[in-house]
Amino acid sequence: MHTDVLSDLVISKVVSVSAMYSEVGASGKRTQRDRWAIIIKYEGETVYSGGGREYVSNHANIALLPKGSSYEWRCVSQGHYYSLEFECDTCCEEIFVFPVKNSEKILKLFKETEYIQTLKRPYCEIESIRNVYSILINLIRSEPKRYLPGEKQAKIAPALEHIAKNYALKITNAQLAELCGISCVYFRKLFADTVGMPPLEYVHSLRIKKAKEMLDSDYGSISDIAASLGYSSIYDFSRTFKKQVGVSPSKYR
Image (cartoon, rainbow, N blue to C red; front, top):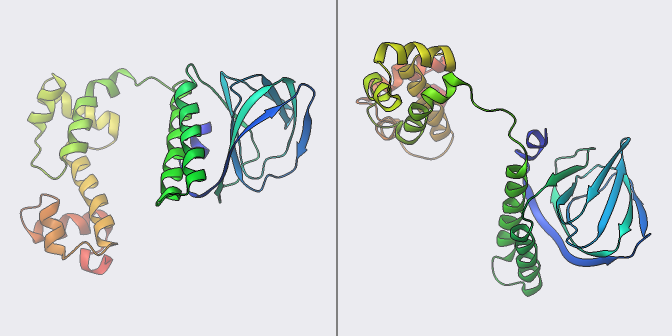
């Protein structure tokens, strides 16, 4: 799936953003691209061929050409298009095409990025990279959903959302069950069956994940971290941390 590759892209630089035009019959060949490119063909149509497949690029289908991809292309209907190239270490041989219902929003981001790059105002590189991420997010969201949440997942969704927003606060099973509109006994069983652990254990696992991130940084003392994550004492925090990680917070740091 596209999202498997795109979710971890780290963009280091926007190289160019250009509005271009191609005539009918224009064609070319590219072997192992040295950088990524996004193509929005807002007029006409171009077909890319690679890996035994064909990919259509037009106003309703935006093409993403990864670093490392090889392909041939031909213009089957003349028109203007935007090409945006950026640096990223990730490589992929497959071409991606995203069907979009309304490409105007994405086209606007291309134009804005071209303006930013041309003007070279302060922070232009940061703004340009931000826009490329916005384009990619819009493309990923245009894809059909991989799956619809099952009945069990849907029932505990309010609890998961509450935990994600309030993991550092005091949370009880009764509180989460009420949010889901089911009994406490049924909630605990349903949550464990769906997530693989009891609700409060899940809360602690999330806290410890955050604790490891804090310990890896210069966040502060261990007592500060414990208080930030909602533990009543450094003893409770250290005991829970060691139980889940295998070492004490101080040894982990």
